[in-house]
Image 1 (cartoon, rainbow, N blue to C red):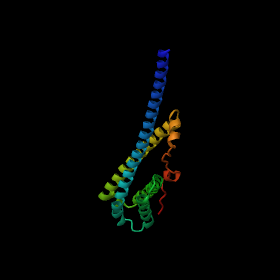
Image 2: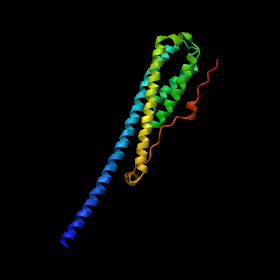
Image 3: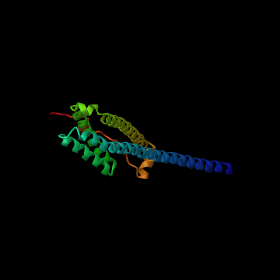
Image 4: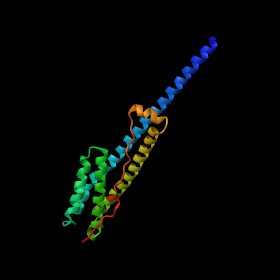
Length: 188
């Protein structure tokens, strides 16, 4: 009987250890995926700041050529200001979408200025902005992949059991508004 009692105690201890190891693994996975989301957002933020830092140089280059395109230049300046003053990821993403639209319009208008299109500074800035846009797109994809991994972890069993007790909720993916997907219309 003593041997049977030790076997039952050992089995109970083993079950408790297994449950604790599962909890520990799931807890660490939730924390890792949350950190991955924060890191992905930081990468997006870095690229958006880089793009915002390029805007003043672009505006100086364009200013001499586009003296009567004030509305386009103001929309780029306003969008840049919105990025710099954004406090939340959603505000930053909205401002970023606004800047993307303003830059599309600026580059579309620039097509009608042959001297500007040939300006080496303008071409270099346009190229840098294009590369930065690519990095932002890649960073957004990484962010959404991280959110997907996190949401899958906390919404599937057994992660949902632990996530609920930890107070974790699903995160929103970054979305591009339909209006930002449209090609800007330029008329003269």
